Image (tube, rainbow, N blue to C red; front, side):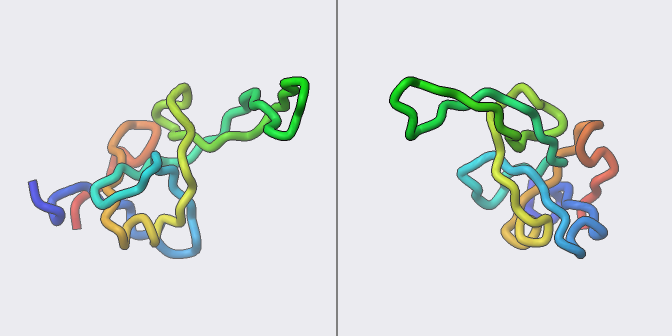
Length: 97
């Protein structure tokens, strides 16, 4: 499979600053997902007593229980060669262009 046959992000996502969720580290061929945020308990790094707080964590819409993702603009992810996730919760109608 060549880079031109991979499903690309919908063109309307790449204008206007829309964000996509990408698992880090980002590289050419990474998969871009529709972003979703979930609330998770995270440790406060400066706490001496192991305190935690709730935080909104970006994840992929197709697998919200997986690891957190980084948010990139769709235009930047597309420019760097990310392919679109074709799961129903993300971009099921993504096509190669």
